[in-house]
Length: 554
Image (tube, rainbow, N blue to C red; front, side):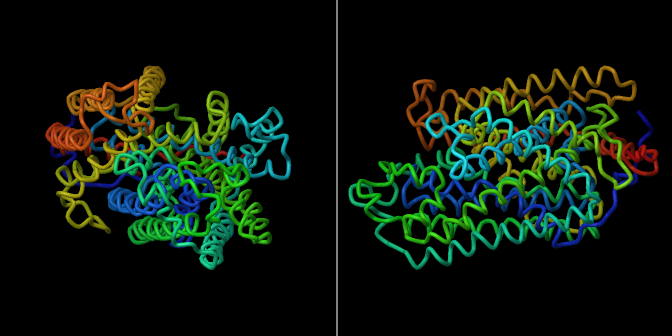
């Protein structure tokens, strides 16, 4: 290892070849178009069916949770404005052993969103083309599968545009995506029925607090909010990132929270009372279930709005799938910069686009179309992957505060000393509420990820060293969460599940997760890389040490 004085000065990692062509609005809309995707089309009805009128509380709770996680990302992205940031911050803070896990989940979460959005597209499109989607099985048909592949190919093709052009296209789509939900809220407020929030025999919160927490991942609420970190993924292409990046993340989350909460209110309030005469948990209108807001508009005799919403159901998921394809290619670029993935992922074309990363985003995304052929079946797994990825941000923030306290931080999170561990607790609670069914599957996926990345790194002579001592807490954390989930009360949202032992009583399980999370957090802070080791990794990715990447004109 180099002498401490050789790496005693804090520096920044940097990327060559990218063009900083995204302003504040473009950066904000990059995150916003990810937040307002297929989630708003389905999640409000799913939440109402699970917890009735109390679903409004879920969106507020989720908004607060996501804002805390987003603030951690805001500091990190402004401090180190590099592409694919979520895959790189843990690498700098804890080295390769921990970094591989968080980097893999960053990629997994990003690469699977486009298939999810394609399925949402096919679900709504089946209103006009019934043969592409089987409503009984909840799966696309053979024709729908082919169309899904075509749609994903279009996402990739658009991403080959220069970033300044792509950003304009994305901004136009996102203005539409925000305007339509806002119009829906305004119109449906005139069809409001206050009694729908506490229907006879069911009350305001039929599932109780248990159901309230379970619905956060199960109804797709946390999934709906995911994507705020897209500005971090594009940090290498944002103008004045110290100012624009944190503002973009914070503004996007605040807009998303307001829009989603109001959408839930009108979903419940505008429902014809006759359809929930036996309560939300007994709701069974197939026309509304197939396309919740469009069906609701039709039931409220608003045919013009129903038509507009069905058109938006094509545009809204497409915009999200488009930007996640962008983010996936930047994460693969970041993995290559960490030297976890082959170096060809860091190759850029003349427009500053990681073109091979885009092609692989398409090919790997296709794999996730095969075993998970519906929107809802994918959401649980991806929600778990998302919060595992998000858990890396508070850990990295806490580590950086100790390793490089003097580093310039254009945005400094107030109260980070206690907000960082709180954010880590929140992430672990979301993992726990996802259920044991999701947790054990994620464990298997993570093992596969370590094997794949391990094989790739074994062929790289310049691979980073394996810093085991700074990741000793990682297997304890993952196995511990698995055991707590197994012994707890949640399995895919169910209470008293036959899969779980249900040994830890409700409320005590939350205490156990919180205490365990704090132990892991402060253990990770004690074992993080030393300042010198951390700066060596940063220096390796700085322009002073790193040569210009190959630029291809294809």
